[in-house]
Amino acid sequence: MRLALLSDIHGNLQALDACLAHARAQKTQRFAFLGDMVGYGAQPAEVVERIMLLTEEGAIVLKGNHDDMAVNPPPVAKTLGDSTADWTHHQLNDSQREWMAALPLTHHMDTVLLVHASVEAPELWRYVYDERSATESLNAASAFPDVRYVFGGHVHLQSLYYRGTDGLMKFTPQAGVAVPVPKHRQWLSTVGSVGQPRDGNPQAMYTLLDTERQQLTYHRVPYDHDAAAAAIRHAGLPEFFAQRLEEGR
Picture: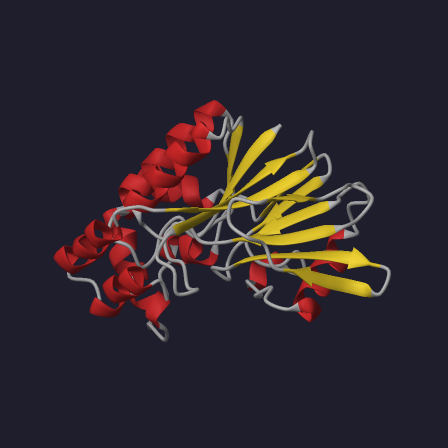
């Protein structure tokens, strides 16, 4: 199976559509969305509607922290992410909010475990950004003895960790280059952000798993980030959110 893994879309419809088109061109057979469909971006309702339609094709969808905040906005905004939660809440209709509220935090299928943040207490939205946090997430995944692959988002970066003879090792992937991920090892990957990359490159990110070939390919996809930034400005959202799309930060 060729499974496209997409996360952290953040209301960026232009980036989502570009990644969906690219993934279909790669002969993707199924989509998995690992949370944070909304937040920061100007088109949350359109993004959610697009993904809801894809569930009719068998797409897997998880809840992220920004999805959770959009359903239940915090009474007091303490962070930049909090600041758009109430606005996003009112852009969504009742059926969209109800659907998002019912989404799971994890999904297990065969040798694959999907989560937005860390498998260790996924409801706490812990970041997996180094060997220590990756080890904690993989250790928690051991509750599923058949799991060889753990995929998450949340950190807006593409990374790959695996258990080697000397402990957990980190591998830096290159865009478009297939990485062998044989099942005799345990692997953990953050799949990057579709709608808000933060590595200095504005191109959208997603990752493709080929379970038959046991290969993982990290993709970067150009899209009209100027249009996405213009939509943020037109909506009256903070200027910083538009600038970070243009700069990939």
